[in-house]
Amino acid sequence: MSKILVAEDNLPNRELIREILESCGHEVIEAEDGQQALERLKDTKPDLVLLDIQMPVLDGYAVVRHLRQIPRFAGLKIVALTAYAMQGDRDRVLESGFDGYLTKPVDIAKLTEEIRELLD
Image 1 (tube, one colour):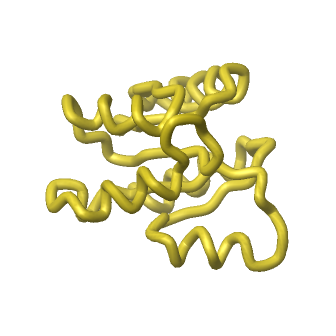
Image 2 (cartoon, one colour):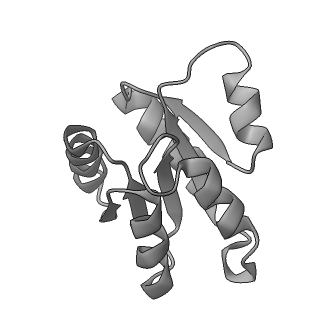
């Protein structure tokens, strides 16, 4: 299956997402903040990144801006994980460089569907 980086500062959320992804056969790499996500990406190139918007050190917007400037990550699929669910938030997230948008709390069916669509 695929290799997926999960960058989420909330441990229970990160553990839940990891369990869901591993149960679907994916390999999961974890990061607890934006800076750690970038560190993990120095050593590996996942097929997809699930990136929390609000994280310490570097937020999700800063991470996606950084990654979009690096040629080796040009085709990397990046999905925003966010509590922002107001009208206009989805468009704002997608316009900032993300390929997908999932709201928290994470809906298992939507998570697996989004991953399947982006990786197919």
